[in-house]
Amino acid sequence: MNTVNSHNEWDPLEEVIVGDGFPTSLPLLDLSFNLFFHDNLRNTQQYEFGNPPYYSINKRHCEEHSEDLEKFCELLKSLNIKVRRPKKPKRLEQIKTPLWSSNNHPALNVRDMAMVVGDTIIESSPTCRYRYFENNFLHHLFLEYFKSGSKWIQSPKPLMTNNSFDLSYIDEDNGKQTYIDMQRKTHYMDCGYEIMFDAANCVRMGKHILMNVANENQRLGAQWLQNTLGNDYKVMSVGLTDSHIDSSFLPLKPGVAIVTKEYMKDELPPEFKSWDIIYIPMRNRSEEDYKSQGIKLASPRVELNVFSISPELIVCHTEYESILNRKLKKHNIQAIGTPFRHCEIFSGGHHCTTLDVRRKGILENYFE
Image (cartoon, rainbow, N blue to C red; front, side, top):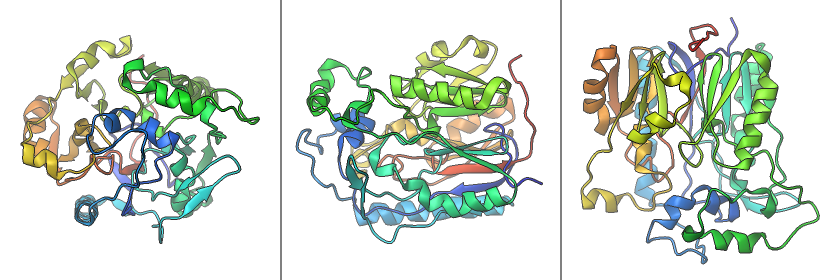
């Protein structure tokens, strides 16, 4: 049996990697960091744009997020799922290439930088400089899977000069000029927009992969992915959000998916016309609840970042267990809630923090 086998987001789960390692402070706020978290940084009073401080994350937040991840792992183990963990950095260190420097970051949201398609591990091209070497903390696991017969490939690593980034998806009224000013200085290594996309831009549905494409960097990523996978797969592009798709749209089984904004139903490709697309509204929050979160790098929609154990069972944020069970009952899908108190701070929910390595199932075509 191949140790790596995963064709979609819902087949019965057997083995999974769950992220680990918690920064006590945020990465260096370089150009790529600002771009990736642009919307949320611009909308918080704690971030004074143009004067990037070195933000601290409350120790309590780190400890509670660690507690919640451990509870999640225990739940997975109780369901007879093998849980693997990445290595953890001993300290925050400066990382450097000939063109830029930033800080390292732990492999916490392991879905972001790698995906499994069939028996192949695919590492995506980094979109943030501080994540350039993040998958090093997963290297020992990927090497083990490779030695056991799995394939292991990597999308081209970008140079990531300031002019590698496509800014077209940022509107003029929302700080675009700041980034343009950063790009005025050219570098002799500039080569135009590069392949830069996160694996979390993609959701897998057998022979079809739906990929969120919001800029030229991601479009090149979709082209690379299609060229690499060949005619056995179809990469479908959609523009639901600025990057990661799994807090906007998640398929739960063939014919059933959830969205976190109602208009997204109409934005999906025509292949989904026959699917039951279920809108899950955001929960109401108290002012105290909002303030206790601290700086928010992810949208509140990340709380609906559910993770499928099987076509009949998902793990979700505790606050959404009731509504998900009510909405999904007719589809025979049960939701089990487990705490994820600071997923906005750490920019990832249950789906983000997992990389499903092995599921029971075969490659199928769910659309044709």
